[in-house]
Length: 301
Image 1 (spheres, rainbow, N blue to C red):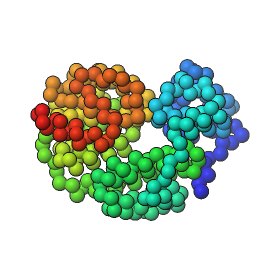
Image 2 (image 1 turned 90 degrees about the horizontal axis):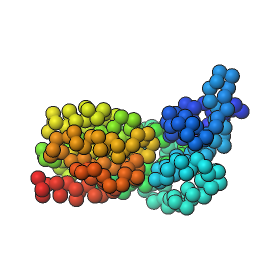
Image 3 (image 1 turned 60 degrees about the vertical axis):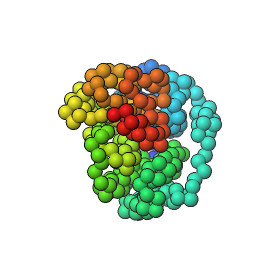
Image 4 (image 1 turned 120 degrees about the horizontal axis):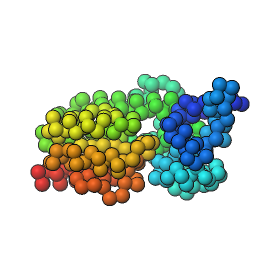
């Protein structure tokens, strides 16, 4: 079993805390100012040093943010209360047979072994089931293992990179889709996570859509220009739980600037508090809803 990094007596520096918890440094500093937590000590150079207890609490907060909780409530709870809340809202995952070796393979630190394990699952299940059924469970399993210290951050990153690799390999064999709907996929500035976006792309490609992936962190003005230049019918945006901006604000700003015929489809844990989306914006809560969305678009096109 991998051992999570142990803070020195002085504590962990902020960059290490960001790696270990997934919470960006800017957000840690903002919470410190706004909520009074965390309250790291300072070393001789004036740099922040976080205690082991603070790092553990931040890990739990990170997991609960993924479940839709707001940070203002969480930072006021002690570690025991956070652990109880995590257990109540995210009970231990019953690991299916096809995932039971995943954590052990990641702990082996062999990228080729991780890749072959994922390729085997994809070939056995097919790309659609791999994305719809295997990956949501595997993603949570890896997240839970990281939360309790069974996996280190670099092992979680290896998992994401190898999943991305095998999906892209599989997509290279999928014939090009029809021209309609033409779908553009990207994220807003400040959103670096693209695995969920890639899962959406795979399902759209399997449905025959023409997809154009622009990667992460595209300025809103560039999204507008690219949507017009490429005559896209749908812009897909993904917001993870670690997104630092306000999804509703970004969508309200972006939607009126897009071409009149262009729809916005948005999803991810960062949309949990979205409420009623602006006009022409569709909140995709489940990946399985994409097929019906495409069919509805085709009926009205």
